[in-house]
Length: 162
Image (tube, rainbow, N blue to C red; front, side, top):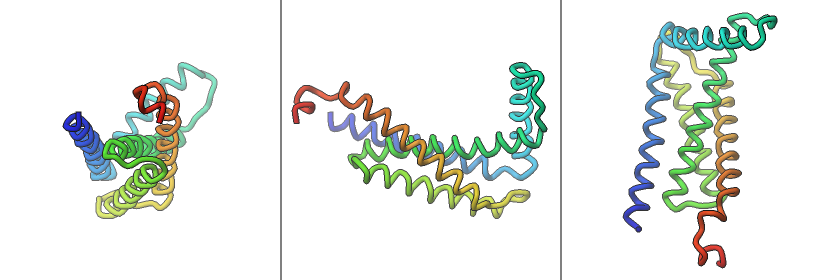
């Protein structure tokens, strides 16, 4: 049983590192590559909006801004969820686990924006760190709420009586 817990902890940290690597890869894209990726997503969002609300008037640059900023938010929301899971699988519990996950996520957000300063056509933005941090906070809150809701269902009889 102890071996299984260690394997799960290692796999959980592997997911954190893999997600961080994906964020790094996307941040390493030159400005025009990044714009092309978000442009494709923006076009798809625009098509969906046109089908759902054909009378709505949106400008492509507004949709593009929305897509880019939501990508930051959700990327760091997921990073925080994965990190909190890994921290807890490593044996850290309670508020400390949430604090550790938040600090790791925010430090990675800061390092990501610094990294973008060295990528042609990209820039580091303090506002993006704040958005990333907000996403991380929401991810931690969601994890805490869901795990609290599921908490009693996965405990053994002895754990519930303690």
